[in-house]
Image 1 (spheres, rainbow, N blue to C red):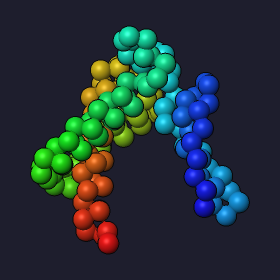
Image 2 (image 1 turned 135 degrees about the vertical axis):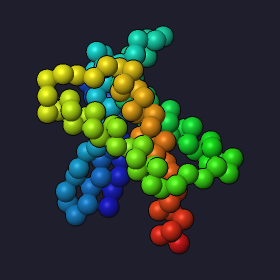
Image 3 (image 1 turned 180 degrees about the vertical axis):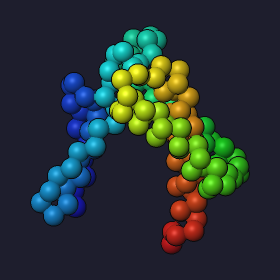
Length: 125
């Protein structure tokens, strides 16, 4: 198995994983200007949803290092709004706003960190 990251000019960072002669790429953010906050020229770096996910994840990591524990049930519930917002946009023509994307991203990032903590504690070595 081989793993590497490459920066694509139009897309941004892509994580590539090669397993058994098959390569799969995972795009971190599409960086679309209309879905990004315009602040200090950073609209080309992360979209509102990815920025929210990163922010929520960082908050959760800081809280975890301070000893805060969060139930896995609530963590899963925190991920659902992002999934629903994404599905709504994919299935219908109405797009959500950047503040909605940012808030659902924060909830998802927070929830994903504590889901990871749960699985790390219960199924890790």
